[in-house]
Image (cartoon, rainbow, N blue to C red; front, side):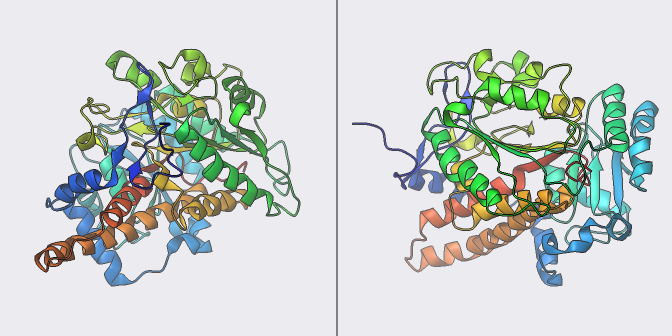
Length: 459
């Protein structure tokens, strides 16, 4: 009997991400009921105290959806800051200084070992109750995730538009110069080009190609951009090759292109390869089974030295495409080793920034189909990309994912509070409800900006 597909088997969960050494899914398929049993034990464990408190405060203040507020584009109203380690190299501070001056921002300091709540407390504010005069809305964490962990970045993301920038002093200098000194080759009134890239070499990528990438392209094509219609370039299915993607990354520069990719992220068990290659984008050349070769994925080393991506923003829907946490969100669902042990920013987005890209949006964890195939979820992607094409700042466009994370987390907390009472009354909650909430919460939380969150597309 042929295996069921993710499109038809609603009782099984299918996950993105390929273990390149043997070419199998890093997180094996799992029955919804079995997965619900595992996470029901996790959700009963006290923890995430800072998140719970922040959500409670956010609910009490009754603030509307900030992602719909046009004033969030105004840096004079909500402000901008770079967050550096208190012990940062003076040359590092010097490298970021032109960007700080350009944004008319300031520098905040993160003390070694502190958490988000402690950081905010030193600036006389709290999680869930932001004051953008004290801590600006746009925050660029110019620090290694070992200094400011991804978990603390996610907490800040409840109230702030957060980006991450990390590399050598020279890399930071180049990035600052690219953003500060870049001049568009096309008028800001001209419609921005869009490329949508999505291989479909296996059952999971067929789903993301047909139910995420394709509908996004259709949605964008149906809406005028800058007063004109400019069809998306579609590199989907058989056209989702490494050669085609590299062509876009080499020749599509300096014009403010939006590049959206949906693919598997490459996952490496070998620690010697993990930092350089994890999160690489697997392309159509991979036949859907067997080990993944270097010729079947786009990694940092594949980005040409003469690549010119100035003014471009990329959104890579793929596992670990922005970075890898110390322990991924599915450690309990597999027997394989956890993803890292040490947190790090993915090398591919860092290399794309070196080539002049303004920012790269990606995932800091595994990705899965519930990101887009539930009611209303696809619209999150479409609206965020649509705002970018309309000239909105990236952090504002992506903030809708943060508010979704907060809303689902609140619902999940309420579910936890009533679960035991229901079970005591002999009522068994629908396991699919728990699974969907848990997956959607983790997914919305893990989208991360590599680069300055205040950039706009091509300007």
